[in-house]
Image (tube, rainbow, N blue to C red):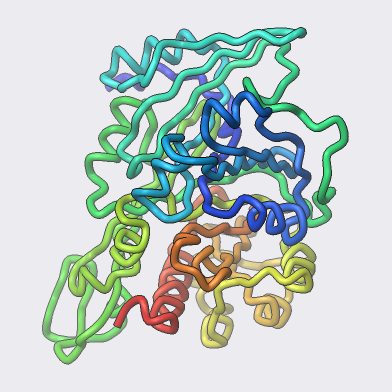
Length: 396
């Protein structure tokens, strides 16, 4: 079967995050993450859109954060249905009209025609489509010598905040949780033209041998609790944009941390975004010193790490395992010296001790030749989130 025609996406340009408290987000990005605040909504856009927005950047990572200004705006409507979360992803494309025509022909649902805006230097064209991502939309944009950030968003003459001292690079991938993901996978394949890249399924009780069997392993007959997932990664070969997609896996479906996310988020939604760094050891050490909180990793993970790396064919890593243990950084790979290092922040609800802050979080990742997602790390993250949810009383 022939590969579908490409949408000609250049990159995943930005996350659009809706929050109750814009000042709190500003402190997080400019102080904790050392992002620069590079712009914000002008008075006209704030009044007409009924929301105030700020734009934060570190290298090629851009986050637009919007908070309601009264009722009726997109941020207010989102926050009536969900806690704080990512309500839109912004993609830069090569040819906006090509992208629009292709999506519409494949059964996509544009929310408007292509809208073109001009500034003193050039043009900006965009349109948005609905998605199966729990109310989050996809926005496609094309710039031709356009100097402003977005229509109605004023670029700061002198950015304020940080200077990216942690070395953030770009958005490596986005992960979304679904109550059932098959419709989303079909949509990504047949509407977006994405391809299957990677997949895994497991349960935290798989290691226990018992007489109750499942397709993914064994669950001890005496078990009363566990958490499982099925995951599939889709990607766009043209831009290398990747989307990891998860759904809960039986038994104990309701206590799966994927289902807990679904309930906390009040529906399907974007769970986390992975941000690349040049040097994860230095970045994590300095982020911790700056007050950033990460998901904990048990010492047993590092006790078993040498044998696990040997089993998956990673012959050597540059980092000292004791250093990884001290910083609680995870390592996984595929073969020879191709591996990756990653760590996960606590979710926003855990960081702020407030449920309305939402279950979204960031991942920090450094790739050293490995392009995948690491089944061992996937399990370690999964179990870490489950422990955190239990500590906070969000699951029994």
